[in-house]
Length: 287
Image: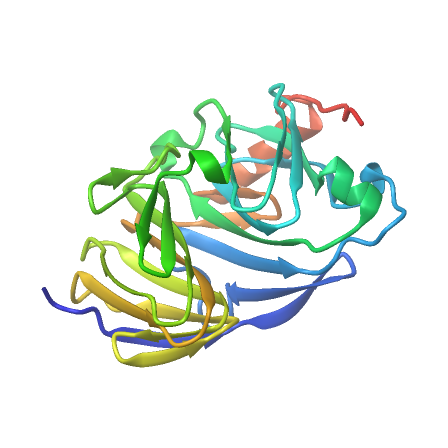
């Protein structure tokens, strides 16, 4: 099997989001997207003690036309939305939301975490939705670690959130072919991943150090692979956590404005108008 070569090694940049510093490997200067992936944010900041839940995180806001997906690594996240979901997911879990034609949601630390303070680390990435599915009904999936399909290897574990790896299927529903993985490797763990050669593929390291197809990559760095093979060989040279995002490119025009990702300007204007006219629903949070 042919190994994929490395197209680019990308170091995250620090960005300020509402007074909070995040690591952002995508988009970055010169790279607007790696189709179908639009954005990756890595949050790793403690939640302060003595705050109310409603004072933390991000309050109600809209989305249309893509899927914001969150992998939780430390702490917990509470989700509420305009289609009636109210869930809290802890470490190792995933919150998957297909915004579809429109949804209002909030993202805040879990209740106990908000009250007591403590570590909080998660990655949120945005997956574009094909034009023909952008106006479908939204849906939400809360997936705990214990219910996430996995592959256990010596000194490591690989979680399959979506798509298929070694015949094991993930539980998240996608609107284009994708394989989305998260992994925890102790030093010395190694595994040969097989990724469809037609998929764009990226690997982001939260912490540690990996040897990837004979290339070294460290925490807060991302690899962007060429589409010239199927195999990605990974060996942990330190205890490491990482994600692999791969998907068939949509090859469609992307026009985005804040929380809306569509295919032309008129669709963006319509999304703004629909939001202002409450056509994406309303959300009154419960604490």
